[in-house]
Image 1 (cartoon, rainbow, N blue to C red):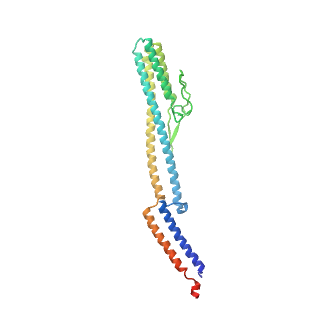
Image 2 (image 1 turned 90 degrees about the horizontal axis):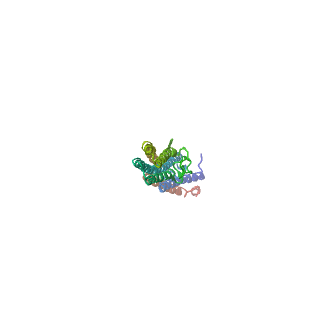
Image 3 (image 1 turned 180 degrees about the vertical axis):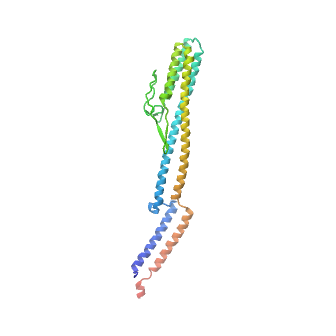
Amino acid sequence: MRITESSMIDHMRGNVQQSQDNYNTTLNQLSTGKKINQVSDDPVAASKSLAVRSMIADMDHYQRNAQAGKLFLQYSDGQLSSVTSLIDQARQVAVAAANGGTLEDSSSATYIGQIDSIIQQVTQLANSDMDGRRIFAGTQTKTEPFTQDDPIHAYHGDDGALTSTVAPGVNIRLNESGQTIFAPIFSALESLKADIRNGDYNSISTNDIGAVDAGLQGVLNARAQIGTKLNQISDTSDRIQSSQVHLQDQLSSLEDTDLATTYTQLQLSQNVYQASLASTAKALQHSLIDYLH
């Protein structure tokens, strides 16, 4: 097979172009710090990199959910902590009224005024909102669960769950039932107020103080559940964070350039490129015409 001068020139030009491409690719990897700057650099690694990045994005989403859920639970617990203090005050009023024997009208009015104030504050806390969402109204987050100055204290929310996905397959209910927590409290406070007004000290001692204690226990139970959920979110978040670190390491091994190795490769590819240019230039100085002369 006869090799023509044209084919020889095309072959040398292809070799020079290949050497230049290798040099440019290595130079680009060194300047960007990335082994993969386009899919064609390494299609298999690029595919794996996309999959890892997708998993990292999912983990970031779970972490944002966990943080938002933690803030919701902490705020709920803070509001219920205030409710706890108010119930303690109501119990003190109940004990004082029960031990007062025959109360003067002024003392009775004072106790009733204190209970009314406690009822109003508890109602405000029951209507607490976070970022425009009523935290004790179930899924009816735009509706006040209780109305101020309503002697019946009707509940306007529902028992729906507000959940947060903090890990694959891990859904945590964030909200506590406003009906379950506050209905017994309002009932106990209204009964206490009525018995103070009627001077029924026996009922205060035998019924109302126990009812107030039961209302307090309901709040404490809700706060215990919140504490359990906070611990669960924290533990899950720690595991997700560990997974994120592992995935970031995996992504780095796929994408990041080993600077020392790449610098050595750059020097080698530069030498090869310069040598191919020199040899090609020298070869092209001669042609068939030179030999005919």
